[in-house]
Structures are given as structure tokens and as C-alpha cells.
Image (cartoon, rainbow, N blue to C red):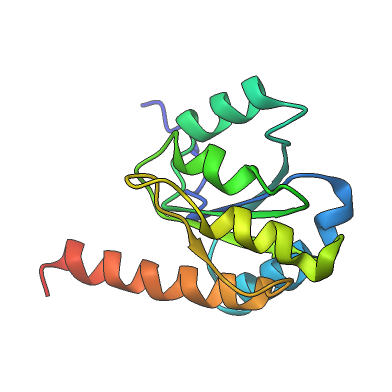
Length: 143
């Protein structure tokens, strides 16, 4: 009998647009770890690695994506345009107090929804992901 060990499913995919976004991601994954939510962290830019990002999103079995990016913050919208799964944006304060990233995360076209938390608020992204996961589990259990 062939018993292959499969990797446990990562429920949340945390994607940062660049290494400079890592401090916010660390806040996010700390909460996910405290809540015992399996996650993976990737660095993929919508501008510099669009093909790799697209392949990653389409192949991912994550239930939720958290996209952390500053400046024009195209990352959350790029992900949302390639999946039907929930996408949570964390705008990062790089310039303009993060207002540029906040607005580009919030102003999505109809049919491409992105939930957006406050600027640099990776913690709330993790808490929102946990709440969404609890709804998914409740729905799947038929409760």
C-alpha cells in the first residue's frame, strides 16, 4: 500500500509585493500563527512577476488571499481578477501616508471585489481571514 504524505492545506496565502512589505506581513502571520491557521507567505509582484503571480493564484488551494502592497497597490486587484476566493488588501504606507495604496485597493471595478483593511493593519487582515474561515466552516458543516 502506498501511503504518500500530502502537505497540509494552507488556508491563507499571504502575498507581499516586495521585500519592503515584510514587516507588515510579519504582523499578519503572527496573528495567523496565534490562531493556528495554516498559511504560506510568498513574495510576488503584480508588476515584476505577473506570470508567476497568475500561476501561483490559479494553482493555490488557499481559501483566502491576503495581499500586502504599497504605492499603486495593484497586487490585490490582480489576485481578485484571477480567483473567486476572498481577497483582503493591506495597503502599505510608502508615500502619501498610504492613501495611494488605500484608494487603489478600495476602488475596484464591479465584479472584482477586494476587502480592504486600514493602512499597515496586517493584524486586522488576519482577524478578518479568521472570521471568513469560520463562516466557510459553518457553511460546509451545514449549520
